[in-house]
Length: 323
Image 1 (cartoon, helix red, strand yellow):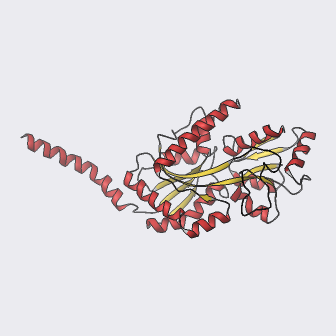
Image 2 (image 1 turned 180 degrees about the horizontal axis):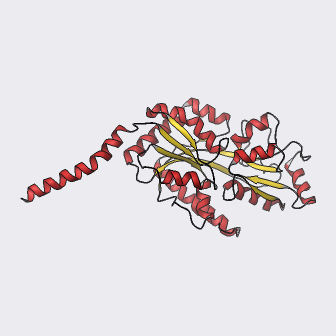
Image 3 (image 1 turned 30 degrees about the vertical axis):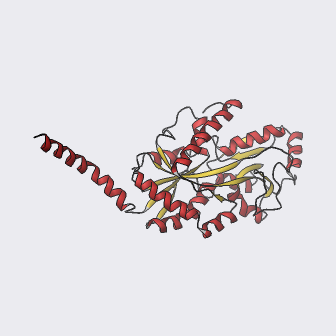
């Protein structure tokens, strides 16, 4: 009798788990939605559109980029967190994830518990750009101009709770300049306003600003990394431009909703790593000023935790009020 009961229990358990196992084995069975929680034209969007086709080819399904901007990436991230954990909805995000965890008192999701990291994707320098109509031709000239007319000039950001906003505040603190903050819903809209001369300067993701600098629609004051960026070798680092010790880069990563089967996570990770290591994708990344940084899910999870702790420390030290 006990044998029959145990057999029935195992049969029921197998029947319960079988659909999950079959789903993982047959994954992906339909197109994959890749949520970008920012508008078109920003760094996250550029990464997503570079990777969508080659990643889809390796997984055997179309990867559809779905821009869901708003509230410093919270809207799109929330949509992803509440999607079915079957691998058919993924999220590509950025450093903003870790900053939101530090800046917001309450989010509609828990970044570490509601997502499973798949892989880091890339990082890139940022670049300080201005409209060519501004008479300052170097960053030091701009600083002098800002000092001579306090609070007259403005700086844009992709949103109030973004790495670019905090990085700009830190830069202005280092040079003792006071500018008025104008937040947007992504780098793309901020660049559009800068091109229209509606704001004074913008610390932009490199890939987003690059075509405008090359076309001389914007002037570049400096990149935020320790070394100059290969696509713009004549643009100095901010350290060279008179702000020693200042560095900041933006990272991007791929995640899935928590509860996504491990086999699916591993399959997507394998495809993403192969995509990031392919010569063609590397070539495109380099041309955009991006560096591929494929990782394991565990490495990305550890890195995400360290970033959350780091930015929480910055918010506390700078006495920035939580939102």
